[in-house]
Image (cartoon, rainbow, N blue to C red; front, side, top):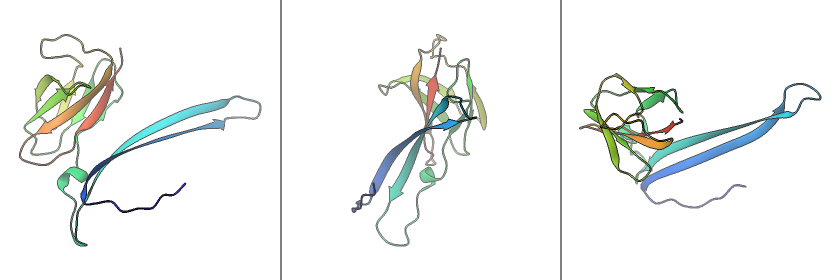
Amino acid sequence: MAQQGTLEPDTYDLNITCSGGASISPGSPDEQGEASYDIHFVLASGTDARAPVAARESIQAFPNPFRAGTRLVVPDGVKEIRVLDARGRVVRTLPAAPSLPFDGRDETGRPLASGVYWMQPVGPVEVGSVKVVRLN
């Protein structure tokens, strides 16, 4: 269903979740799959306005979700990464590097619980955050 309307100049976050089933061979049960995408975009007033760097560059995490650890790919200009829990509390701060391992532990070295965490960049450049999921 298509909806039309007007959005005011602002920053918007959009989450799209897609799911569906497909049969691999005749007589076999359907395989179910789901994908979720978080999209961050900025609407500016004026026809020639350009999106800020944050809309084009963000931290990336591989693998995601992760169990033992994940590797962060960090754009230039980021000074440190704050790891935030679902309540927005900083559970760890990491010094930035182009390829940064994250072992899923807090500042004291304890393993973090399963859940959603945000990798928030800090620095003079505008770079988007990334959501990571820790599985135990």
